Length: 296
Image 1 (cartoon, one colour):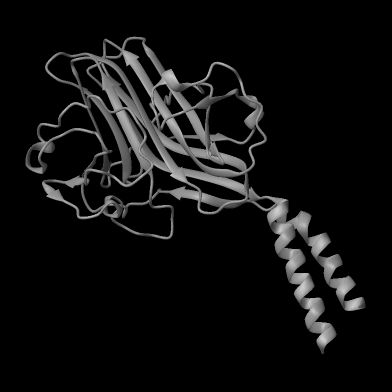
Image 2: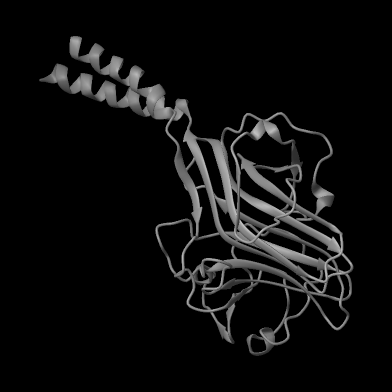
């Protein structure tokens, strides 16, 4: 009996210590071996074009502004070659978080949009990166563009503790205009988006959020439409538990630009295992130890 009491006591003492330990649940990049070459990505309903001409004449995104959380309906393209499965869009299957969902939409008749994985060309580090590119098509204007990327967390029973992105943004012929960078989180099955945290302003900027009460959070439905039309207007009170995924939202609007680009080298999320999950595991382990001891 004393052994049982000791085991349960250890479990009770150990629970707060373990539950305060952060764990990395999303870790994409930074690396120079993610992809061996330039890969154009397509989300379901994206540009309809043949692999042969996609690199030289990418079609504008028209009509699709949703985040498809299922399999890609059109395979990614690699310099004219079509991959066989959706998993191949992240070529190097490392121990990091390989799979992400992404989409973008450029608005205005002149906008040609594409997003891709680029090999060994991130500013300052030569790492591979994810690029969202809004470029002109004949007329030097980029009217408006929205992009989103989202990763599922590697496990469940989590309380969010930090978000971090390493990104680079560049634009040509810029004169004022509007840019936004927002964090996206998913708690259970519900998406939320932060208020604008300001444009990515420097090459290789590392942006971190740990004080989640310092920004306002709103409901968001990117599955219906990634654009601002599905962002709620009322701030939400969140406890940041039951984390199931996270990502970011990027928006730019400036008629004086010939192109607008966001490059992302790394995206990481840390979380703390929730006490109820750990309590069950530790309690169960202590109970098993008691039963074995008494049988002996």
